[in-house]
Length: 134
Image (cartoon, rainbow, N blue to C red; front, side, top):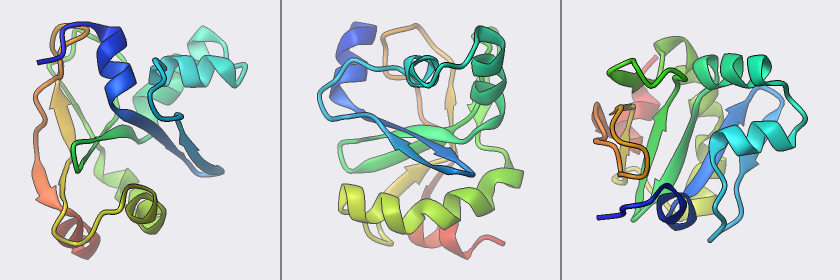
């Protein structure tokens, strides 16, 4: 189990799906989604807005995990159905980048846990099943 926020961020590949483009953190870099937004020059308020409303996630050990949320006092951060189409548009890029296929697992949310731990992934599906959702 990963025990520090830094080791988690270094172990996984973070990404953000914006209507204007796909942002992907470099491999083996300690970079949070919040850090990625800050490096774009966004204010704290703008970053909080994007964390709440923009699909983001990570690739780790052959699986994708997608979600959105910003407040640690919420019990779950789930990908909102209104953003499924955006995620589906980027799926060919995510599949190519991370060498995934229709049978690869993906999760559409996490249960908020302790910072540094790998949070429990929820709403398991496969890429193939997710791509058939309309």
